[in-house]
Image (cartoon, rainbow, N blue to C red):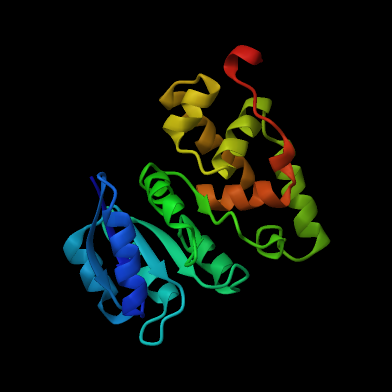
Length: 223
């Protein structure tokens, strides 16, 4: 059972997400909270996944995210937002969020996205704007440095990175590429080191910016 806490300043959003997710046999919404209640609620309930509103009037989502990420056995956190070009999203992703969802995500997609998060995958809303996902570090020098780091990856590491960017967990990547779980984990560690990023979501964003998502990873049998 995947334990979920929903944090939003609007009671209607909290109840809506709770009803949708609780309809799934493998997901339990153990609590909902406003921003001011969020940290204490997460600490008490110890959920697997937190869906966290990025903009709240009492305590903003970025503040809650930073506090939650310091907890022992911290849950996976995905940000909730109304705007796919919200300028706070990139800050949240670089602060440890595992992705973000738009509040108008289709109900039938929501449960699967929560499962992806719980399995260690990355969730970047399918409706995300090109402006957000393809935003670059700023200077041409920084862009060139990113491209150079991507070129350090082996062919197999690029295959794994493509599937990380699609949101797959290590287990799903292993199944797709016919690789063992330990091998996938080693590849992901090498990717993060070579790309000089701290998380899977940062690696996924870099892959988006580098234009890798048009490529097609090959199975081990097809190499």
